[in-house]
Image 1 (cartoon, rainbow, N blue to C red):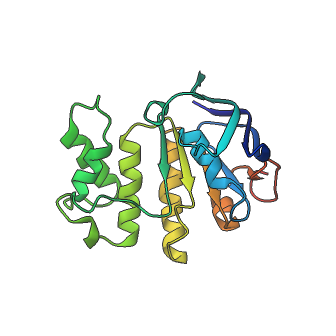
Image 2: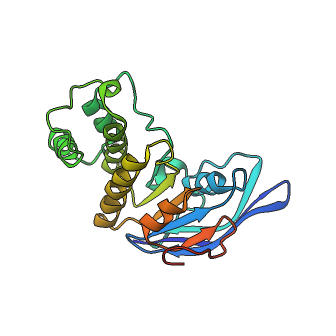
Length: 215
């Protein structure tokens, strides 16, 4: 499966903000960089189907050969991770994982147990998310997203609040699992170290290639 941004352009008050004409291959990470306010998160909002009405998007978004340009967010099958893990405080760790679980999964307990194992949190499903470390919370957030069975993954600077050592660890965890599942990934970041760890093409927010891995 691939994610195609076909002459996608986002404008605000008629002025161009983002232009992107790219295809992201299965397991590839496209890194989008640019200063604050340049439109990086707006691009992700457009891909997720949550573009604020002040903006207008033209072009097409095609995922796994299917055009999703005009589909609502819930029908696009695109997962997203943010700077904050946004775990639900009123749910246990297992409850948070179960919230993201795709409806077609019959063995819900088995799927949650496997996600806990993959996150290195066996036996901790009953815990309050607030008792977890930052790295553990980040792993739970990713596994919750993956349990929804997305066909692509968006990363909105999800490593920016982690310290240096933990940041490298969580980057590997996220990228390895996205590649293992063959998910096309688009990541926005300010940090070239994130781009280098991703190992894919690097572009600025207007779609122009930049220096860095795969560029």
